[in-house]
Structure formats: C-alpha cells, structure tokens
Length: 214
Length: 215
Image 1: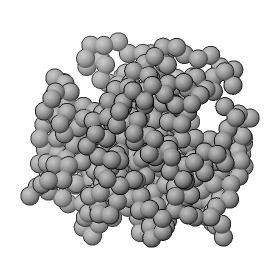
Image 2: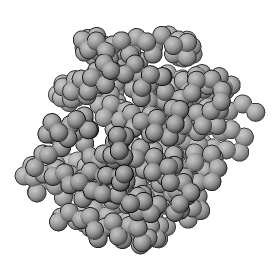
Image 3: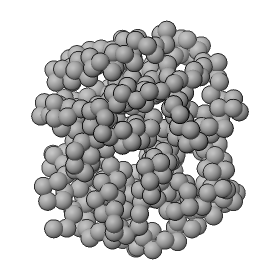
C-alpha cells in the first residue's frame, strides 16, 4: 500500500514531506487539495486535518498531520533505507532536532510572513504590509548571520551529513530565493550560500521542483 | 557529571525541567536573568547563539530548543519513569504531531498573550490590544480542536501522557494565572479535565513550586 499525501505540491509544508519521501526512496501518491479554492477548510479535509491545513497523510489505517512530525515518522520507519535523516547517535539526533526546531521558531517565523506578503498576497490581489516586511528582513539578516557562522565550521547544520535539520529548511528557502532582496542577502553570506547551493543540488530537490512544475 | 539547565524560572525552560523531573533525572540549574538581558551577553551567546532559553549542558555536550531537549531526555532515559514517547513508532508519530501542534498553533498566540499581558507592564513596553484580541480568538479556535481531540482521547496523543501534553504546562499556567484567561480552558469540558489532570501531576507541582518567577 502506497502512502497518500494530501496537499498542494507547490506549498511549502507538503514539500517538506515530499522531500523526505524522495530522500528515503518511499513511494507515494499525491492527492491534490486545492489551496486556491480553500479546499483545506472544507469538511472532508477537516476530518483529516482538524486545523484546516496541509499536509496530512494516510498510510493504510495510520493517519498523521504536521509536516515535520510526518517527516520524522517516515525517517524513523525507514531508518535503514535511503538517506539517514536522523543522525548516527542519540546526541547527534538531538542536535538534528535542535536545528530542526530552530527552523520552526526562528527561521520559519520570519520566512513565512515574508513569503505571505511578497509572494502570496500579490497573487491574491491583496496589499502587502511593506513596513512589516522591512522589519522582518532586518531580523532575518540577524538570524542568517547566526546560520552563516554555524555553517562556516559545519558542512551541514547538524554536522558533516545532510539531515532532517537541513531538509526542513528547503521549501521556505526555495520561495525566499525567488525574492531578489533575500536572494542577495543569502549570496552575501558565503557559508550560508555554499550550504544552499549544495543542498539544492541534491537529486531530491531537483525531482521536487519538477513535481512542483518548475 | 550532572546535567545543567539554564534559566529554569522561565516558561520555555520549564518544558525541559518538567521532563527531567518526570524521568527522575538529577540536574543542576543556572539562573539567567532575561529581564536584565543576560541572555544577550557574550558568555551566554557562546552557548545559545540566538540568545534564547533554555540550554541543557551535559559535560561537553550542549543542546538548545526546549522541545529538542525534551526529546533528548525522553529518549536517553527511556527505561526510567513514564514513557513519554509512546510504545510504537506510530504512537511516537502521534506524540510528534501534537508536539508540533503545540509549537506551531498553540504556542504563538499564547506567547503573544504572555508578552503583552504579563511582561509588558514589568518591562515597560506598551501592550498591543489588537494583538491581545486576535491572539485570544486564535487560541480559542485551536482549543476547540483540542476539545474534540480530548473528547476521544484521555491525552493528546492517545491514552498515555506524553511530551505533547507536558509541553503545554508552563505557558498554560500563565494563561490560567497572571494572564487572567482561565475561561479559555475551564469553559471547555474535556480541555479542562485534561488540564486538571496534567497540572496536578507530582512532577509539575514540584517544578511549579520550586521554579517560579514572581509574576
């Protein structure tokens, strides 16, 4: 039985799970939930994801939501297959978890409203909060400096191997790099730019971009 | 060598502290005065470059992010105290799901209420009434989903207490206490019963009494 992923293939959170499936060589089926028509808020989807968000998975009788939890589950279930995403020891795993949580609290907290204002709102014909975006960019610069420092002495966020910690950043990074100012902020930070170029060169990322229609 | 937790008086750190106490692990604490900005001093930034709390130090090993610390403790001390990760990888998946719900949906509006109602007067910055109103509404919507979940399950991830439940303790204590919005919990029958159950656990009572900010 093939796992079903409910979501929109261009949306960041489903992409997080898709990257995990691709890295772990797990077969999957995407069931499209149309965010543009708010299908995620309709009764049928609310039965799968009561907060009205994507993604959700169904794997036989097993159901799960929250993209990072789904990715951790599959990385654990298929530990011996594909890329090892969860580290080689308990201590290493905790550092992977640490940087994955940094993504949630420091990185995504800034990336998400930037992407909403500069990419999504224009698409929907809504007004962008320009003042907010400028404040967010300043804060993002500070956070990117910390990442840049980390990546100047570590090939990847949790050490010498690519893990969940790096993977979880990729969907938002894909969006951010399409924004000129942010692209320049990234390129101005040598180690951070080196890391992004290396991880976006992975076959899983390239396959994801094809799936997402790029 | 004894584990050390930094800034135990603050809510985020108490997620880690309550996990240590549940698992019966010995630890020491080092106070960090956030109100005086100690977390932005170079000595602290050397261990937590974002200037946030907590940090766990275990010999040469250090880890930050409260929920990452919770996972580390729950895994390292799996064979003692309650199993806070579930018994199967599917149960663990449910634990991770609700831990992520706490991090991405419950915590942000509750943090906004905490900063604007509890800390604004203490630290002398103006409270944003619009943010307070929106955060209360948002938190109410999230708690409606919790009410449905807890009407089917004793705890968030199933019929066992887990990291997902414990992660809610410190900031929810602010919600029913100094934030003054206990009705958000009490008006929801199953959420209220769940809150009473988890907040009356011996470990939380100990943490709450011992590591308390005068707010």
